[in-house]
Every structure is written in structure tokens, then in C-alpha cells.
Length: 290
Image (cartoon, rainbow, N blue to C red; front, side, top):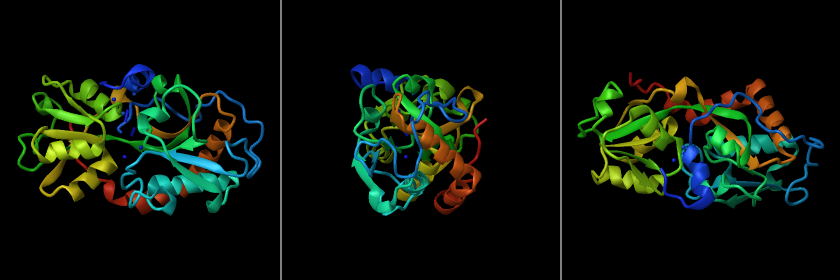
């Protein structure tokens, strides 16, 4: 889930400004490939200028949701983003026991200022607004925003975005999921914003909202958790462009180019495709909302 503005915006100060532009649904993406403006001094294996010499500190939020992570234990290597993090670490020359995980909230991770991590993986959609505060690696996943509802809901059988206009929709604050509501659906009812997806799922179960917007893999996970829920469909791409997840780094980080090189390598050698097949294979085939 990350995923990240993961987006309306309630967060104060600088955090809000950054999040407001973004979605997990973090905000829409414009990225193509590497986004860093910094030059890495060296990408020699295990020799990066990390926060702690010889250690790669990797951050994500808590809870860490499936299918991105499993059992809320990022260090177990299970789930797509945990697996990607370890694959990137390996490319950079860090063995599994040289990877240290730390908890950083979604909005804190993309706020301006020095970071408490080397890299952060948490379903962060790459966006121009977020790039003003942080660096992104090359994208490691293309994602779509999706509407989930109870089967008894009036929107459960909707086939178009227009059919959602009068629905009460909700999403996690600061995410592209929220932005998808405001920019793609443009409902007549004010969308509801939640601090995290657990709160949003409870609201869906309790009938406080008609539909919950999350990224597609998370949507499948939600329907497996909430009895009687269903995927209504995938929303159109924001601005017609693919929304992509990228690894977050401090603005101007000397690691960005090396991390992007590692992600590009995992893309070209088929590792990312294999990991998607392993962890996200059951998340295909949702209907498209026209």
C-alpha cells in the first residue's frame, strides 16, 4: 500500500504542502526513468555514502500492508516492496544482514529536510510536487487507482466514472488515491480522508463511505479482508499518464543515481517482473471504469 499522499489535505505545514500535490495512494506520477539531479561519487558495491558505514538503512511506514509486505515485518523479505528493497540492496553490494529497517510515516518520508533513512519504499507515486522535496529512483512498478465497495452498495455495479459522481468516497490522506477521487471522479459529495488505510477500511465496513479508493494490489487485499466487498473497477490514469512507484531518497542524495541504476538493472534483467509475478500475480484483471 507505502502509497503513499499516500492526498486533501489535512496535514499541517510543510508536510501538507508536499502531500497535497501527491497519493497510496500517493499522487500521480510523471516519471519516466531516473529522477535524481545528484551525481553519485561512486556506486562501488557496499561502498556508498550511507548514513551508517556498511549498512543500508531502509524505511517504510507501520503498519506495512500486504501485498507490499507480509505480516507487517518488512525485514522478512516477503511481499513485493520488501523483496524489491533487498534486491536493490544486493545490487548495491549490501547483504541481507547489512540492511537495517526503520519506521517512518508516509507523510514524514516525503517532507522536506534531512532524512532518517538511506532509501524508503512505501508505495510512493512519483510526482513533480514531491520531487520538490525528495529524490525518486527510477520507477519499479506501474499502478492504477481502484474503487472498492461493499457488494450491497449502490455503486457496486458501476461501470463508469460518471456513476460515482454522487458517491461518498474516501482515501488515505496525502495519497494519489485521494487525488484520483478529486481529479478523476470529481464527486458532488466531499470525499472523506483517513489517516491510514485501516481507518478507511473500517469506514467502508461501517457504511460511512460508499467506496474506498486504493491502488489495485491493495484493492485485492482489501476484498480478501472484508467479507462482502468487491472491486468496482479501475479509475482512468491521472492526466492520461502512467502512475509509477519509486524509491524515495533525500533531496540531492549522492545515492540516487546508484539506486536508480540498481532499479534499472532489476528491470532489464527481469527481476522486477519475476517479483511481480511472485507477489502481485493475483492482482490482475479488475474491470476498467469508462
